[in-house]
Amino acid sequence: MKPGENDTPSIELRTEVPHSARIYDYLLGGKDNFPADREASTEIARVWPNLPRSMRANRSFMRRVTHHLAAERGVRQFLDIGTGLPTSPNLHEVAQGVHPDARIVYVDNDPMVLVHARALLTSTPEGRTAYIDADLRDPHTILDAPALRGTLDLKQPVALSLIAVLQFVTDQAEARAIIDGLMRHLVPGSFLALSTVTADSAPDEVHSGIAAYEARGIPELARDKAQVEELFQGLELVGPGVALVHRWQPDEESRAIDDAQVHMYGGVARKAG
Image (cartoon, rainbow, N blue to C red; front, side):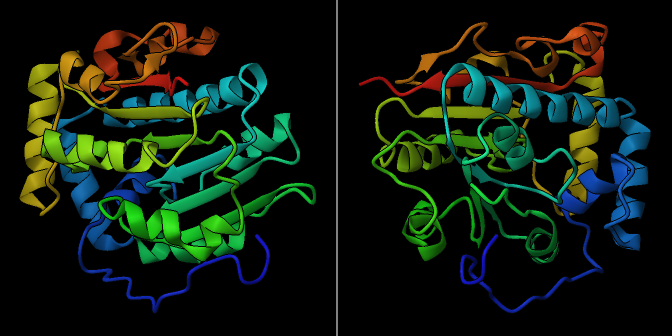
């Protein structure tokens, strides 16, 4: 990042309330969490034992998707909404590993993510990264942010990344409206990459885990495959279409994972001209 490229609201961490990004961090072995997050994580993982493995598979999906879009599709601009706490390799590291001049805008509304993003999400000299503190449900604020307008050229293709965030938008119509509100401002040749929770591969375990999330004030929705495919309506899906994230253009490590241990569907689609 460079000075002046970030929106900088006042920071209130609310450490006494568990937060989905910090739960994710703790279950992946991170240290950027608090007692409320650790207590919630322990209880959730007790009834959702494969959640950490599913999260790791999702992180690997993000890396493969970003590399595919940069290396195979020539994408040099990324808008990553629902960034979460930085965990290397981050999206910009993958993209700039292919194109050093790639530009990435990260968006999240967790103050702790903001603190870490400022410190850790730094760009190559040739490229640029920026961070916006904004809510997924407010596409206009994201798209009109000076940090975005100063980083991305919206006259050129952009890859919109919504990785492991839409499960917290529990109304399907609202999720569709969010995607439409963002994609309509991106030119043809842009892409949508997303992943979201499903119970299709382990119904009892996932529904028990979601109930544990909701008991701690974090609403969550598990979508079936048809609902996830609906999120890509009007776009051209890239092969293999919507799949459990470890089955999307898998590497050797992903192929070794059992389907019952992964509870995320993912996919990538192109906006046609």
